[in-house]
Image 1 (cartoon, rainbow, N blue to C red):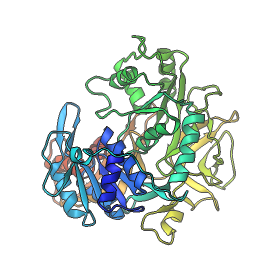
Image 2 (cartoon, rainbow, N blue to C red):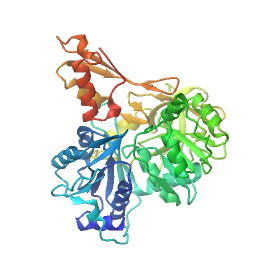
Image 3 (cartoon, rainbow, N blue to C red):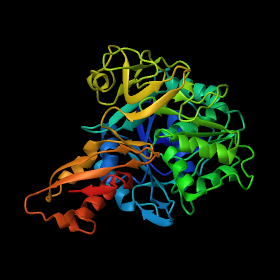
Image 4 (cartoon, helix red, strand yellow):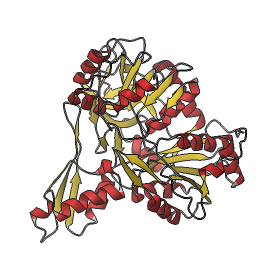
Length: 477
């Protein structure tokens, strides 16, 4: 960290400058973030499974001066080369003064870039800039239904307080513990994971597909790492149920105290399966959002766990469920509102000087209250049930995606007149995301059938320009 921070200062990086990472969940990403924070720069990252358009829609907004970029990554036994994508990013980001090449595939450092090995060759003690409480720490992105992704600026002090509260009090994470949460650098859970350092715990970094080379791979990582806290998606838990995985049968999870799930509500069958497989270990289903890089509702080590419910509203979170008339309701479905500020709420959106986009995003419901966009029920005993999104934001595999991104790519194709993407929360914990396509005049329906030219072009363009997560489960003419 000291060596990279010294190199950043040597390149002229100053407090407030933006440093971006196009990296998988590897140690270099964590080191680059910590070095960025040490000099007072503002960190932002995308996972390398994001295509060039999705990355540029994010990084262009914040005008970075340094890019840390991997030459590729490995996924499901395949090697994915990203050298051309990185070259394109360098061309399209004119504010860059320095590019750091992180060679994960063994490629040579391109002309004009600095190799990671050269960057860390001269050891140095970390020097930390003294910064105001509300100095920007990082920028996260939350996709909406229209326009570019929202660039959410969160502060050093706000994240420090919120993550200390969550990890030490809610998650019961202790010094020396190991915390493993399956995530990528493009999801807020990566930022949450690395905050394990705040309590003296060790974050476990796992780069790879969620169920490769076998469905129980995450459980094996948790066991090999001696994780005390293991976090994953509800979708992965339900996939393990269907695959007949038995994580506790070899007795290798001795140090595991808590299994946490997020991304979508954990179905009752998921609770029952975890309890059956792991005994009396703590099961914590939690819910929050990128917008606060934290949880509104979740884990409490001193309260009972009820099947299908999240345990309680988090400390310092003035959460309300409100009906269509704005009345607070208990035991009924209402919209999730937060009545008082939380430390990690964004201090601003980037490029939103008058705050109008910020206000439109969160404060259009009950006067003066944060409207998050989830349907919830607060139960009489203080638990919470999450029912899904109240807006049209997609939430697939725990990652929020903007429908506008998908429509823009699809409707650019000459064979498409209009398109509509929808997301359906399934009772068993799955998520079905079909794409409805109104073909242009003269386009035969067979072109939109599997194997048809337009069908395959839509899938290929979404995969390459956005990410594999944006590819629909079905294309319906």
